[in-house]
Image 1 (cartoon, rainbow, N blue to C red):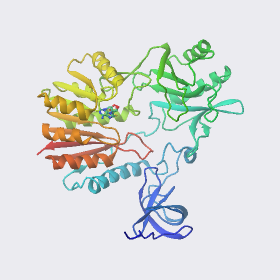
Image 2: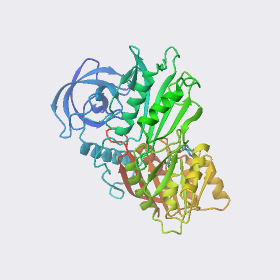
Image 3: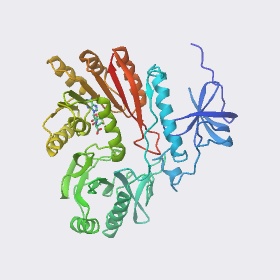
Image 4: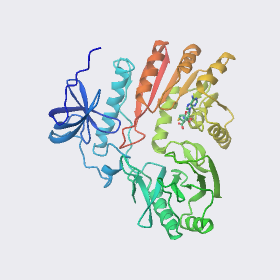
Amino acid sequence: MSKIQVPVAKNEYYDVTFEDLTHEGAGVAKVDGFPIFVENALPDERAKIKVIKVKKGFAFGRLIETYEQSKHRTNAPCPIYSQCGGCQLQHLSYEGQLGFKKKQVEQVLTRIGKLDLTKVHVHPTLGMNDPWNYRNKAQVPIGEREGGLVAGFYQKRSHDIIDMERCLIQQAENDDIVQAVKSICETYGIRAYNEEKHKGWLRHIMVRYGLVTKEMMVVFVSKTADFPHKIDIIKEITTQFPQVKSIVQNINNKRTNVIFGDETKVLWGEEYIYDKIGDVKFAISARSFYQVNPEQTKILYDKALEYAGLTGEESVIDAYCGIGTISLFLAQKAKRVFGVEIVPEAIEDAKRNAELNGMTNAEFAVGEAEVVIPEWYKQGNTADVIVVDPPRKGCDEALLKTIIEMKPKRVVYVSCNPGTLARDLQVLELGGYETVEVQPVDMFPHTTHVECVAKLTLI
Ligand code: SAH
C-alpha cells in the first residue's frame, strides 16, 4: 500500500477558505483535500492559519489572520462562551445557524444516503422566534472553592468546575433555583463531592421545569444515602420556591463521570412533575427521558403527525417510543398505536401517561425494536404507518428489513443524527420507499445538533 501523502506540515502557514464546521463547531478548511480543523472559524471565511498538529487523516490549525469574515459572524452574547463548550455556535448568527443546519442535512443525504435532492425536498430549518432560555432541564456539577460551593459547568477539556450564575440557553427559573439551592446548602455546611479524592457528598444538582405547568423538580445527586440537614434544606427550598412539587435524592457512590446512580428516592412531594405538549399531558420522573426543548418538541411532533397522514383508521407503530410522547401524540388521530422501547421504566411511564390522558388505543411493549417488531409481524400483525425515533446510532438493520417486508404505506423517521438517518433512508429506498421530504428542526439552538423528521412513502 502506498503511503498517504500529507500535504501540510506542523508550524507551516496556509491561506485557506473554510467550508464547513465540525461537530464541536470548529471550522473545516482543506488543503489539497486534506482537512484542517480550526477553532473560531466559520464557513466562507478566508484566513491565514498555522498548522499546530498533524494526525493521520487530518490536522489542527490556529487562526492567524482573517482576510474575509462570514456575513453571519456575530458576537457571542454569553460572557463564558469560550470557556464552557456547552454551546458551539454562538459566534454564528441565528439565521446562519439555521442555514448551516439545512446545508449539513443536505450534504449527508447526498454523500451518505446517495439521495437525489431534486427529488427529496429538504425544507429550511424550523427555528425558534426567541432561541434563548429554552432548556427545561439543568444538570449542574457541584464543587468547592475557598470553602464555598461552586455550581456551574466543567471547563472545556477539563474537570475544573466553573461557577455560573446564568446560562443563556437555560430557563431562567432553573438558573435561579440552582443558585438558591447552592447558597442554602452552603449555609448548612454541605460539602461538595471531590472527584479525585472520592470524598464529600453533593455531586450534582438537577432541576426540571414544566414549561406549561410551571412545576419544578429538584434532584440532589449525592455520594451516600444520608442527607445532612434534610428537613431544614427542604423547608428552605419549598418556602422560597412554591412551584417545586418534587424533591428527589439519587445516590451515586461510583468513581465515574456518569451523573446518576441506580438508587433514587423521593424526599418530599411527588415522584413526578407534569408537563404538556399540545393537548397531551406527561408525568416526568427524575430519570425519564424527556425532550429538553418543549417548544420545539411540539413543532417536531406536529410535523411527525402531519407526515403520518392519519385519518383515524390507521394502525401505527412507534419504535423507540421512550415515555410514549410521540405514541400519545399519534394516538389522538390513529385507530391504535403500538409503542416499543428498550427501557422498562420508560414503558411504565408510557402506560401511566396513556392512562393520564384517558387514551385506551395505545399499547406498549418492552424490548428491542429490532426483536419485538419482527416477532409481532410474524404473528400476523401489520401497521399502516411506522414512526421511528432511534438514538444516534440509527435503526438496526433487522428493523429496517421488517419495515420493508411489512410494507406500511408511510414511514416517518425522526432523527437526532443526520448521518445515520441518511444511511437508513438509503436502505429503505432500496427496499421500495421514496423519501419525499425532510424537515430539519432546531431543537438545540447555538449547538451543532440538528433534529430531522423525514417522510417516506411506499412506491
Ligand atoms: N420517541 C421518544 C424517545 C426517543 S430517544 C421521545 O421523543 O421522547 C430514543 C429512545 O430509544 C430512548 O428512549 C432509548 O431508550 C430507546 N432505545 C434505544 N435502543 C433501542 C432499541 N434497540 N429498541 C428500542 N428502543 C431503544
